[in-house]
Image (cartoon, rainbow, N blue to C red; front, side):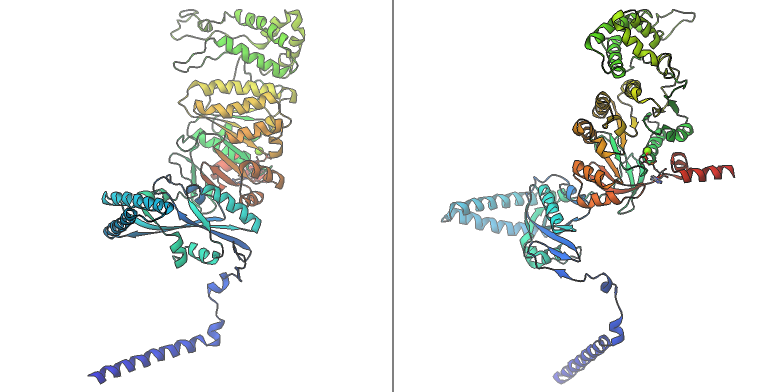
Length: 633
Ligand SMILES: Nc1ncnc2c1ncn2[C@@H]1O[C@H](COP(=O)(O)OP(=O)(O)OP(=O)(O)O)[C@@H](O)[C@H]1O
Ligand SMILES: [Mg+2]
């Protein structure tokens, strides 16, 4: 019997040896060894481990931080999000292993008994007794939580940081460290290679690393490590604006989501021809589709906005010499806001008119402004309008028809004001300064309003307004839009300003810049969104040392950075604290590509329009020519 078994084993070992022989001889086969596997292609040429604080793999400088300790519960929900969404070059690896609950309760109980015994018998120094108290407290806490249904886990957390230079690495490490509040961590110096391997998604944790980073945690605490909100963006009621370059997922953005974004403002920067107007119109058109009142102001190339505006049945108002459109700057439009009424609509209007006149006549004196009060009031009095709000309306039952609803009285126009101003000899100069707005070809503010301001899509093209009148026009248009914005706080609405740098840059006017900044700051309170684009970042930051540019950027929850030239990229990197990798990307972006900052999400997006939209919003000469030819054939 024994012999038989022995024989069988011998036979087996021969079999094994035979197999070994076959494999070895196969591996030694010179043809076979010349065949390459994918590993040979992707393998780095070498790993430099000479430095204690990082390793270098084919020019990538890598350092790993080991997270050693965390508080049990104080860690706030999703506290790793900021690191996970940090962008390129920062990777977070988390291992977690569930343990048998009953076994853990037993172990904790026996450890607790031991600690208590040590504490009672004394003999330890002060420090040690403090540690033991802490250990005992933690054990009691864990035991009570586990007996109430919690679960026990061991976790290990590694943060891998990658940069293109040692200096870049140190800078990135510092930034990451500033986000690791509440976590006790160590840089894996002298053990970077083991730490690097442990941090790869291979489930190959080095034993020493495991020992150092092992931390027990309850399921309730582990929750705060999840969900890993990925870099993709999908707001529940949002609009599709493009795809995530990284994972190709659709980006669905709802700038009006007040839970997610503190305000609905957006700033879009990018060099000339990179896609600002394209993206702005795409968003504006989609707002219109959602029936969100959308008001645009274009200080440059307003004609680019006409095809889409016409297509959606919008109202294209061009402010240019000879145009017949009129907006009566003297008109008072009482807001229909329920429960809130101004003390005196006329009083408010007089203030705004005086501001408008000071934009027209920058050297107007305070005395002249004071003297203007009387002719201003007289102009309205002649129409029966006084400081009493009720005087704005016709009496019920007046006129040929019986009025069932109060009807506003006819409003005075600018030339009537000018006539009154001429009556005051000291104000002759002011009356003359108003002249170009009365008889000249720039009389678009002199006359009763003849454009439909209620339209859901309104474009104000101010690109042909003479330079000296741009501040006045801009303010007057904003004033009209403001009234609309304030009407109903519960309704979403958007105001879009293309080429903002023209209004708030070095050539801009401080009062206009102030009013634009104010718009960005307070529109949120009226349920509105302000969206601005700018091409020249340097210039955008010029007026009053960047007060307005920075103010607008800071007041915008959503920031889109399209391709920029080197200098502008450097400025925006500084203002938005972009990472080096992001900055490099910004310099390389192609048309329609950009960095999207939306609350915690930072991602690279490819903005996409539908074919029909593209035809309506394209500004590219060749494409326009192609569409025209297609239309003819
Ligand atoms: N997301 C996109 N998808 C497809 N084409 C695009 C996209 N963005 C830009 N383009 C193309 O680039 C052209 C120029 O874009 P756009 O007019 O928006 O540039 P811009 O940044 O507003 O330039 P400027 O500062 O000179 O006004 C568009 O007309 C279009 O042909
Ligand atoms: Mg443009």
